[in-house]
Image (cartoon, rainbow, N blue to C red):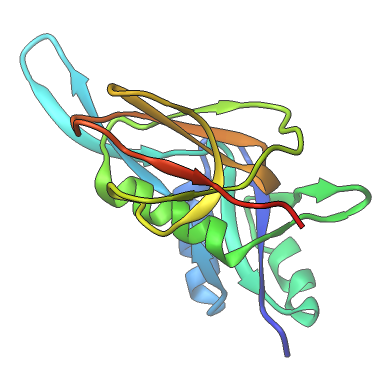
Length: 168
């Protein structure tokens, strides 16, 4: 029984409720929560909100997919080329690491083209492979191709170097 990560689309603002419903039926899940500083008239507060609005990730076998579809609040799986889109394990790990290292992360939807693969040589993503879209002294953008998203964070490091990987 091979388990794969998939993205499921949820009702609007139902990400945390869907997580609770998935827990009840013992489905492995991940809802990336972004720490965001919010300003009110009388105070500032660090809150956690879903990074990807209306998306939750599930790690299931083919046999468990129908159980996920029946979870209250789940609209459907995210499809790519007529099949539920499989999210690579290393992409889930990149999201987890990115959120562990940064707060106030912004995600922007993009149509990802085939790009050069890179291996990050130093910094918080050292030895990770992926598609770095943009990198300078103040910002890093990391592409998560199967989700068609780019994560952007401001960095306070002097420099992060990447090495172009040879394509096969």
